Amino acid sequence: MTRIVIVSNRVGPLSDEGKAGGLAVGLADALRKRGGIWFGWSGEQTPEGIDGPAHVEDGPVKLVTVDFSEEDADEFYSGFANQTLWPILHYRVNLANFERRFETGYDRVNKRMAAKLMPMLESGDTVWIHDYHYLTLGQAIRQGGFEGPIGFFLHTPFPAPEIFAALPNARRLGRSMLEYNVIGFQTERDRRNFRRFVLDELGGTTEDGELLDVDGNHVRTGVFPIGIDAERFAEFAVSSEAQRRERQVRNLIRECQQIIGVDRLDYTKGIPERFHGFERFLEQHPESRGRIFLLQVAPVSRGNVDAYSDLRSEMESLAGRINGEHGGLDWAPIRILTRGFARKSLAGIYRSSRMALVTPLRDGMNLVAKEYVAAQNPDDPGVLILSRFAGAAAELTEALIVNPHDDEDVSGAIQKAFHMPLGERQERWNALNAKVRKTTAESWAANFLDVLDQIHRDENTARRA
Ligand code: ADP
Ligand code: F6P
Image (cartoon, rainbow, N blue to C red; front, side, top):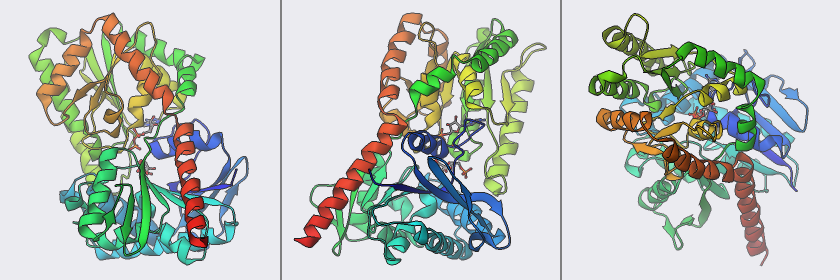
């Protein structure tokens, strides 16, 4: 087996403490079983930044991280990655900031991270780059002389080409991505959008819809939906820590039912829209007041970007208004927690919740949906309410699928879940659980890496012939 070198913005941790972010959770699950190097940002800022010494944590998975300078953190991470690309990838052109210094910072960090990585690479390595922070890193590594396989996986959606084309450097970014041997997407819709972009905007061609060619440069595309280590998560859900949390919740809620929402505090997650849907439910079903409430766990994310701090104020004031208008002396309809939880505690919280509202406006996959399913008690499972705009909806079709923009639809799904008979809950859960257990983080990584190896071998054979 070749050595795998993973590059992503966030690295680890490989432990189970308080992680928030699908990429870190998915990769930790996949790498724990495979070993290799995982390279990225330490999350720290120092004056020397990337040029300073790397931090190395040895183990079966060697974690190698570097600091960023303040300028790099500002222009690359908070800037181009999270104020330009992130909103575009999630169809929010109105929120995108096209400051040119962000673009310069993005190019600079991609090139410097590639230069830092090059001396660590050995011939025979396979490089696997993740997410929108590093669209151009593969090109920089190729230009540095690395000849082995380089794959890329996009954890977010790839939007309709008309949206992606709003980026001033869309074509340059798109062309640089042709340097990868394989690009993986979460869903067929994302792959189709990327293909349309390459054909319409870059003048590319394709014969089979998967291999895209632009002036002799070609890249293979594939669909690889990411999963979780479901078996492990199900074990978490019956651990003593999870049981303690479950008891804690049940003592608190007594006869009440808990709806759970767990999301990084991000405008793509549809939290205010979810609150509106729940409010609609309370208005349409006054008899349910005092019998059900929504616990929203929303750890603060990217807090120094205005759109995120604005969202926090919006969420808090909306919950305050709904609680004030609909609450009673002994019952508040919405509770908010902005802290992180260890995985086992989170599993216990999922298990004590009668339903989960996973209603992003756009999401690459959404691992919370899969975790909620994995954590359920087979004898009395809860109901998953899932946005049609989450990548997970392509797979988890037995959930109650909703349009998160439509508060009537969300309200109707809550009512249906609230009264769903045990038999139907079990039937839906059995089907969902079988799917969640089938596509795991490990099988996701193995599928991608197998395709990457195969493509690279075929290309070498063709080159030699
Ligand atoms: P994203 O990648 O956009 O953050 P996902 O739903 O795919 O969205 O992944 C989020 C991950 O972060 C999940 O594994 C979830 O369990 C984890 N997470 C979210 N909130 C918390 C929290 N408060 N404490 C611990 N983990 C969290
Ligand atoms: O999966 C989407 C993603 O942006 C990951 O790339 C990222 O690690 C995670 O969400 C959390 O975001 P951040 O690293 O900016 O806190």
